[in-house]
Image (cartoon, one colour):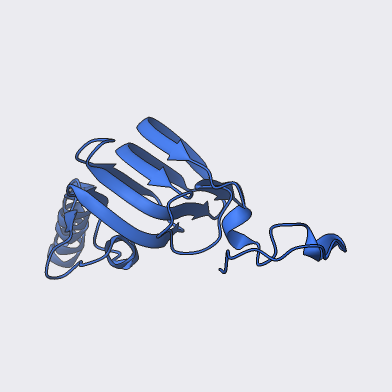
Length: 157
């Protein structure tokens, strides 16, 4: 074999060895300086895992890629709002937190606190999900939307 052929073969072995090295997982903590919100950490493509500290986070979180999300515990890491997983062929692991769409401070009018769309696969363990009843979304709780106009309510979205 020529010296050029040997050099090319050697370079190919080096490239295979480099690309065969395992990628290191990047754990991103919330809240932190680079990730003050859960959505901010989810949007950071360098994060392979999002770890949520104890606290209450009022936000809607949309996840569209493979990701692991975990909290400190179901009693201390609380998302008031909802979590939406969307996208085909993605796997999302969620552990040790509460997702509460019924909270008065929830970031929106949600009946489903945890929602999967477009074929996203969820693996859930140690998660408390509290769905909203939809009443917080009604301007007129008495059925005004369906034609009943006898009374007004004080609930405003």
